[in-house]
Image (cartoon, rainbow over all chains, first blue to last red; front, side, top):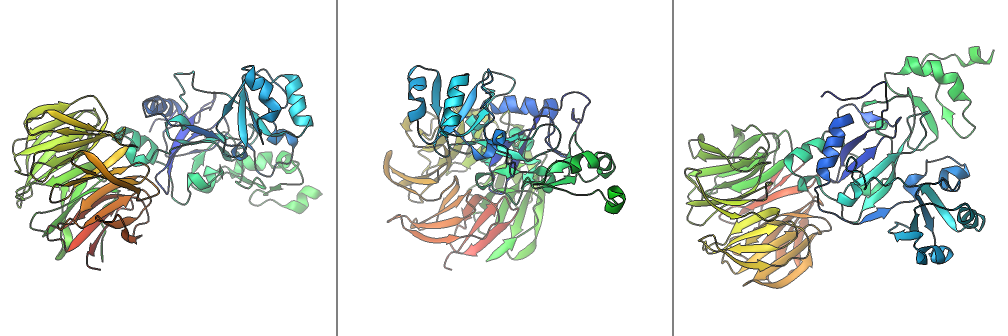
Length: 277
Length: 284
């Protein structure tokens, strides 16, 4: 396989996988998200993604919990839309009451959510962002970059795929979170043979996408990544990516200052006493 | 109960020989294994890609296989020799079925075509349909109806001349069809696990047989029991008269792709993505 990965330029790619139930998922890597070594990625993955756009359309259910990095207490982790940046923003609420006027005025549209309700705003005004957060009405919000307008990157949740995105910034290879689920999941055996081949090179034999909000592929298979360190699926531990221990050693000191709520695993052979001296 | 192991990838299709002696299993590993149920070592027929579908001719002289690269292959039996081969569908063959006389074969492919073929020469006879994504097909036992299911959930009927005679509207995507041995009932399996029974072109009854997609259906020769296999990994037996579940088997560690019943109705088999085939006694 001649993958465009890893490369010196952007590593923003995607890969596909099948779970123990035969359901199919797409993983958007951002940049630092780990990619299983044996899968299609780079341009081959995007070509496959374009092919999947031919599949029958299904409804999409947006997930709040899958947009949140586990064990990260900062408010920003759960409310990435609170800065009211000029981008589409997805807001999860208990009810539509706080945004009735915005919906009536066409500034927001309700979309299907796995819990409570979700409203997609083309742009969340500063005033509305403040009102929703000051009142505690917002249960979670995030910027929402719909791929649907791009022929290059069709929305595969709308074609029956579970959709996972890399959650952390590029300082580490973090867990992926399930940001959308299909109303009717497609099964790998419902794909034409060529598409089936594209997705089944990665099998999460022990996982069910329907039951799994966060996934760290490094915990399941050999992966490649920009980074030498990864955050485990609990968000509580940082470890070296197997095979990248030497690079990890170089970054260990800065990683070790990351915060009290995380355990940064020392590199192999690390002498803690020597560091303290 | 017997577990047949040896395939190196998912088992996709099964067919008993008409004399009941052999069970043929096709797999994504690119082989067909001919299991002599009295002898544990199977004979292997190699293919160039995944074997997506297969069927014995009614007289047992032919085994026809369809592959993921669109080839249709006819194997002379019992010699197990490849008799002929043809490129049948672009993108892969999905399903195939013999007509009752064994002279005609129908296929569906990922190219959204339904074709009929001379079974002994694999020369194309007709293009029956070319509009939809056809996912399943089955000839009625008297050969008067070819039922072809499509992804939107409906079923098209064709008469022996290839004329489209009826269209039945189904509720969800359809992946399996089977006629009862007396030809009165047509069973359909859908993506939501619904099992529908059609009689005379009318929906007689339907029920949620499985929580997930229903991939395989087969009637027992007495027509009293319908066997279903599903993406939920189970095989279920149904009382056709009442729709009641008679039993549910969870032998497989992955989804069930195929089921078949022996011609004498004594045994049945289920193939799975877990690479195994389970054969069991139906009187268990």
